[in-house]
Image (cartoon, rainbow, N blue to C red; front, top):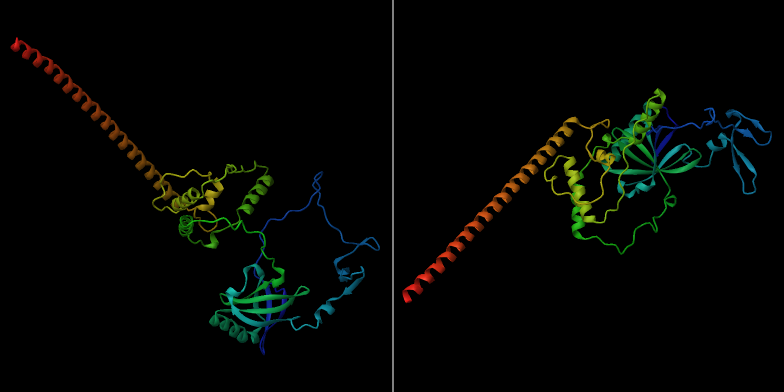
Length: 357
């Protein structure tokens, strides 16, 4: 990897020659500006406003604009000779626990490479000291025209430098939290905990940029003159009125996606989940493709659950029919007994009257 900065790490009286390389790269798709009429590229030209002439990169330098509009030229030699100890040195100022660093301060990340054989031993010394202390180093350094704050930590067998924003560059989240009068009960918190446990952890390697993939499909289809891929149906609108029902259904959906039992209960009446959301909830293999075996197992469990449900319904229907039949039979017998009794009673009364006479 190409280095973007050469210097040294100042570790007390120890100086470690190092090189700085980018630890991350952007894979986002970029577009060019074009003229809609004929598809021609739109380009920006660098023109000097004094002589109205386009200039080359070699003719361009840096300048600081003063309050009165005066431009003060600043050369690369001026910048390299700044009266600053961190101009070419990453100066470690403290060692602190990692949780002391606010994630909001995290900025660009770099890898630090040892600058030659003499730097190997002090480099490894710093790396092993960071490992054993389980701390990170807070440092100051100058890069791209300004002094910066940084954090050094161990990543596998290398030392990484994370640029940090200065504390006064992080805004306070004032006025962003919801109304403090809103409360949640213990049952809602229990369901939220259950949902968190059900979703569990995930390997970040399995996550991928779906927007970039969809955009690549569109670009490939247009380049080949083919029909564009169909967009998924948008999620149906509707507000979830029952938070408990939404939490319960979320837990069931997560269990069903993982193939766990107890996912075939009566669904709650909440908003419908879109196809894209369902796809995100389903565990995927590396590379973003769904596991065929997992899908088959899930489908098999759904089929089994459906058969069980159908069998239960049929059994319930038989029981209901049997109960109705028994009731009718009992009613008929009772009616017959009443009729027989009624017939016998008048006959006895008539016989008694004849004897009396």
